[in-house]
Image (cartoon, rainbow, N blue to C red; front, side):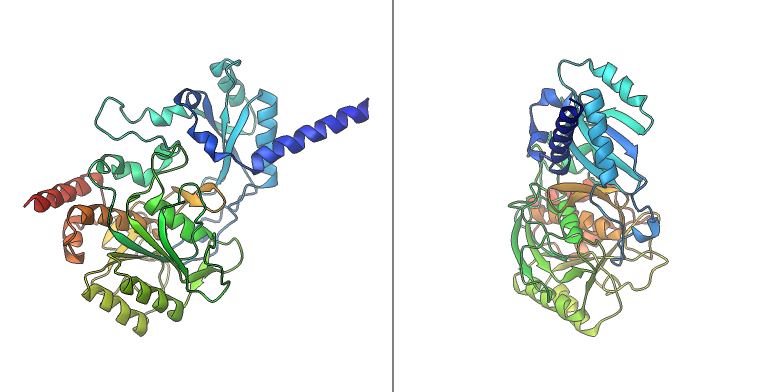
Length: 415
């Protein structure tokens, strides 16, 4: 009898573990009523590498793992079993050192009673209803309503008022060259959003490479909105050309390397394919060949946007090239022209997952996306026009500043 109970328990654990390891993100688009019974639960995960100095991705330095730890998966499983909850999704919030889990409370259980019980759990640090994120947008207002369940967790998207801007522009018709590591073309929030991809790095030869940094930058820029899953990008209507010119320092690493040759190939392709914007979430030493290519791009009216490293980090090229829009994050920067959101940015990562990122690498696509929104309204604008409208005494990119820029773009377009 004991053996039978042991076998049944083992089978149950295997079954539930499969649910944890394979998140069904399509379920995040269920009817609106289910959202009211979804809880966001966090608990401290001591297995997460919390070396914050290694998390700032201004120059592709090494950072910790992004997969759920076996320990955090077991805790999530145990909480689900103990409180009779339905597991929906889980991901590590590395900047906070916690694992974040979405549970759905069955209709047969009193919602408040479940919340109270979870709050008493020793490991649990936060319990919050998922629907509270969605009600932040007034459904009676003219603000566009999206069904993406993680939208309210997107700090940059919210602070810049992007949802309101999407009523008039999504970057439609603007071609953006994303020069980075590989992008996960099969991610549910990126599928169909990447118009063209090419691997210009030496190894491996497969063009469809799901790598962390490129996938994360692509998510900020172009994640598909209103599809019932995940997040929404700043310029989801833009045409994204993904050039893999960088590669991880080791498999699964966010840290990555590029060289003069691969970046030159990518810049050349971006120019040749008539990109309007080039996003370079990277930095390094001055390079004559790359500077020539960047100057060529600027001369053709291409807007080049590059990340600026932190104040304690070396490098600064290509953000230091005259005419390039240099972007940094608030709280740690080195003479950027524009400071954009770059702290705890929720975005896409490979294999149907999401995670929080920090660094000017992720500030840069915010500015590139806003530039695309402006260019849709006024296609003839160049770098000087974008700088004139987005630059200010504080260098801080704000919703109010973008509103003014959008109004100018609309007015100029009408004339």
